[in-house]
Length: 171
Image (cartoon, rainbow, N blue to C red):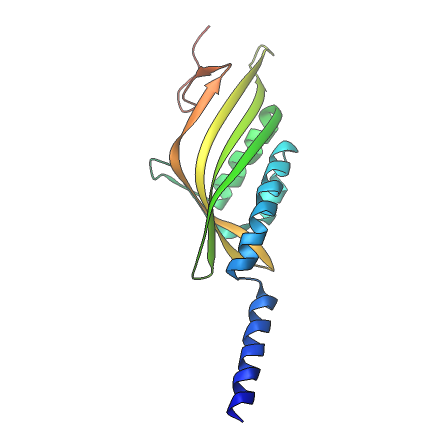
């Protein structure tokens, strides 16, 4: 009788874990798809993908420890996509971790953005950012819930270093 209970418990536990999908194996299998989805969404300037793939309590933390909530992140993304003539992203997924139902991976994203200045001249901005992205299982899939910069982003404007927080030089 005890063996039957243990077997039933193990079968139930395995079924419950696989049915909910919030397992380490499931997360590790999902990382490549998440990175591909991110790349495709950036390339097509699809802010809706980020809206659908982040939790309601998404937080972005930059290197200065300044936090942005989900609304601010999505608003910034929509502004970026709206002002850009083209956007491309290349994602390199790195170390993957899983602890207590939360999956994370470190990745480096190189984003190339073409924008026009007020006179209509095109400029190319390249941003390189390294973040640790944390995910929770929500609504049947892994969703971003915390993005933390782990390295100071590097920005280039027309091949020259620049700080996007500073006003552009007067020409």
